[in-house]
Image 1: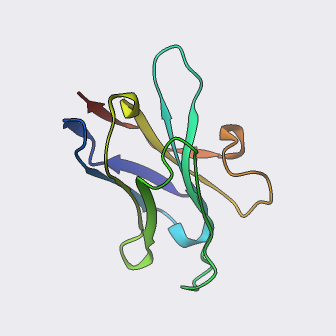
Image 2: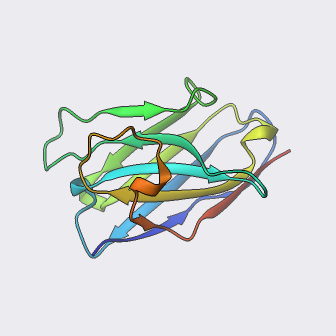
Length: 129
């Protein structure tokens, strides 16, 4: 059973960058599709980015991004470190939120449906001013 721990959040000025990490334990992160979601108080959890399972292969991974972050955020995976990253550039105040990573088994369901993810990390706060 995989467990996820996020890190890397913090406070940054608009235009700056942060890199979030999602470290997995208990299982191989490459076996799962990993999504990054964010949430602000009173709003639904929003899909930010997703990387498909690798199955031990370095080719064939698919990535998806929410419209509001395309061209600014990049999701990647390091199977050797059992970690998925979210590189966030050109940050805007509206990117401020609690960021969560989540895991799901291989699925054909659209990537940004939060209920499809069975395992969640505790979240890491990002504040852009």
